[in-house]
Image (cartoon, rainbow over all chains, first blue to last red; front, side):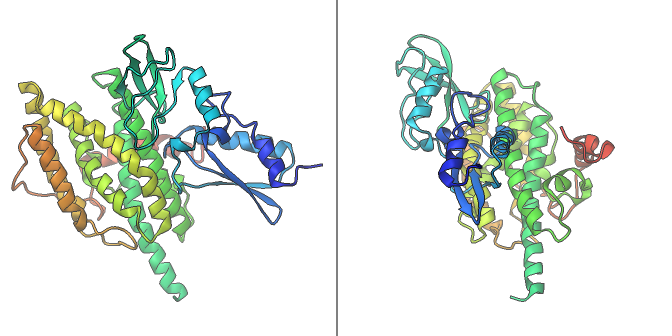
Length: 154
Length: 252
């Protein structure tokens, strides 16, 4: 039987991962904002991390594959407001990021040093606020001297 | 409101949003053309990231235009199938990447403007415009951090870097007056004149710390939103649209 409740659809979407971080789900990143049942059509709402995030196309395709594969009637909506913030990332997502060598973001509005994902020291500096993707910055650890990326607080 | 009144309001809001969209797209395209020419790898990445944010903001505004458009044009139609004379961007944004100082001057003069604009637009009664602005606000903060830090570094740098930064500010200054000219169609948008004073304050303070002169009494070019274009626009738009014109409807 086709999944028919909001909870069923939410469970199905647990398997949709970020295209660049294959262990972190779009739900844990805060990109998946919710599922709602509107007269039998499941309305899935997503929001981009940064305005021009090129992963949104892939994420839409991945959602389509999972839901169409399970015969779910759905509609995908992209919303900008409320604006995505790194504060929406789950603790699980932050732990996984560190495992991938990417530092978790500082809390928005707080001035704090970013912790090095390699050695765990806080003696780090920002090299560039623009990194390999729209959502990351480049940093260097002054303790272990390794360069590393961090999710930038927004 | 009568149906006719609604159509008129929609067309006014669309015209306003189209100007904002074109500003973002044209600057994104200019920045894209600079990638791989930057003096450092980190600057290449910064420039491409800023271009990407602007492209995303452009898509937000074009998407809204597409909802309002009586002809039902899509985001892509607006970007790829209009002639360069139909673009409504400010002339500042289509000025060429003459050198790194020009790129930074253009970016800085625009970033200060965009940050002020987005802060006010994020509180607009038009919730669609407000959403794009809210999303873009913090991006604009990051862009301004970058461009402002380079204005300071180049201005208060070596004699050569100072001279080139000053030349770029002078060359682009005549295109800044148009940013604050009244919009023909404003809708729920922000009156450009209200942005001038806060813009001038930040720009003047930055140039002063950078030991650069604030241009005075330079004649101002008033083109842009009214469709007048500089000689540089047509070439840039033609290059941007080339593939879509040669192979209509082509997708990646």
